Image (cartoon, rainbow, N blue to C red):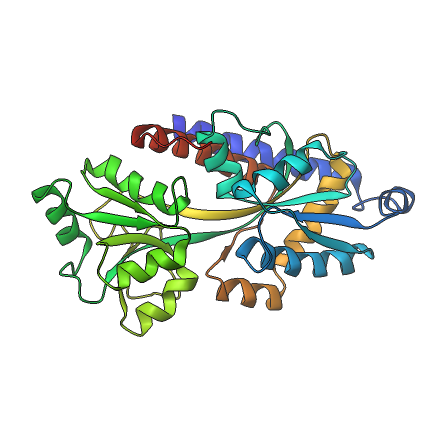
Length: 333
């Protein structure tokens, strides 16, 4: 029954969005479009330049600017794991001139685990579109004795507290992925946090830490060259770039999914006609072959869809992060 309710809720939200599009007709009337697009749109990235969220922003901004016949300026406002830029957008006028490139960190983990957030990640924003997801891959060093997930779990149970896992820092999606495994499998394993994903990956590769969950893009060449061994992907289906690597379910751990995600939001209260036009053009951009190819190189599975799809995805992820984070005793300040 719960599944049927979820299906009905999804169908209703999709129908409502379709009815909104039909009632508006054209994306925006000529006069409304002229009034709205009278100055450039600012696309805020709450992380430093060069990262995944920034690359996505620049790809989408270019296509969006052409489609809307205006300028879309990407502005980096990094700090506090995305909180500074996110809070800025939450306080911005809901007039369609400010967008936010958000991620799991800023809009799921942060709100789930920070007892004193500077913004409301749900009520403070209007969802526009879910750009895509990034699979987490369970990896060990090339010289590791663990050839598969079963042998890793068996060793963790046989030697409680001895096995360690790396992450790019406390409260990151990589830690949450390992803590989800720890919770589901009732393991006693030790977290070794690093200042970033790359040093964590390097120490797993060197055998200083037993394993970690890592995003696909940085570990793909290392797996292909034999410097890392991929035991499983934390997705429902196998990953195209790692076709020989089983899913966690295939490896004996059912109902285990751990993915990063990237989405685009606007301040709460942004007019529905503006949201519809932005959603339409962003979805069109996400189907552009150039954009798809570049996102594929980043290990991103393009999703798209309605604003409600992003809202539902975000709420489910907040619930998961809250449960796992509390079980692990993770608190973000």
